[in-house]
Image 1 (tube, one colour):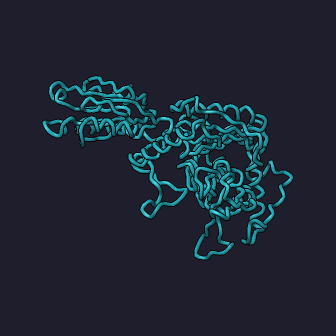
Image 2 (cartoon, rainbow, N blue to C red):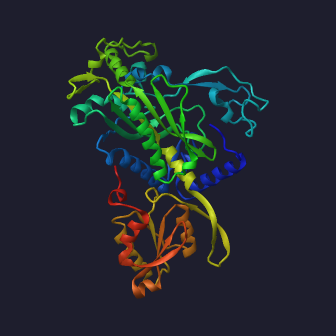
Image 3 (cartoon, helix red, strand yellow):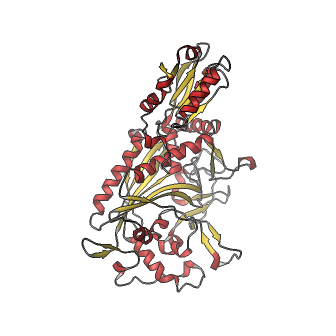
Length: 486
């Protein structure tokens, strides 16, 4: 991960973003009451709405608005042979080293980004006090046991990715739907990786959510589909407001064992460039491996999976359980797979970082002060509009409640009558609410309200019976984007 030019300024910006997410109820440290736990995070009232909107936007783009992708929600716990066949038991590991001086552990392939346990301003390589061990492999899968007995026959794993649940259900989807190649299977769900050194806020965690899709296509068409999905996925981020100047594509020179080609979509976080999503051409590797896994499972005695050798591939593997029969060509084959795999937490963090801004605005007395604002895309904003009675008397709350009750049927809106109107504006700015609707004395007289824009802070007066249409126009929302996609 490459650090941006000004490390001090970037560190300060990241600290401000983290402080805002805590102050406004976006993200909390997991188990903070007990001192916290490293690599795990809780999403507060605003954070759960924002992250839900990110996942809904992904689902809408990947499933709802397409005719060639269906959804799936596979289990977190799977047969342990799944992870043997996929290669995770034998190869899903990072090189780990220990420092005998500070007792911390680091990834051996990422020491430049690590922090010395005794000198936080330096890395373990140049701190001058470290005594590092030789690297050794550390498997990143969390182990658990099924049932009351904790022995090797009951051992399984918390899934480190959602993709394998899709591959394991390929035949089920084919047999129960009308899908034909090319088509995709998408899912959003939790994954778990026992990271050696989780860091950079929610960017690298031990528990996280993925948004993955496996797109099955005819061998020979995979290169074209790979290019298409790279373009489609990059455009999704910019359509939702991410700065194109902070996005880049990085093609992998060193490929994973399953990959024919891989391109990462990276974002320039305050702490440096980081992967948002990887698009990989996985060829027919996974489906063929799981056919081998099925042939192996009957011979497994429940012992240590690392010592088990997968059964040899059948000579006619292209006719196996995970093959596809093309009715038009009258041919059976194993499809190739293009996988766009995104992180819901990383995308949410990127949208937060990109939306964070500071400008100047006058307070109630006319004194200019610094304003913190989240310029979130309206589709992602947790609250679409805030309903604010100017006073807590003279009929203002009653009229405001009436407007709130009307709008909440179509929009996620907030009602706020505490503190001065200026403080309420600032509060809504900091959670990214695009519009504030103020009910005042003129509302009682002529039925008009003040609508304030978050970004420009400009205010207009409109009739309250025009609010629905105005919100749809101002927010660029349609019937499908106003309601959850899942």
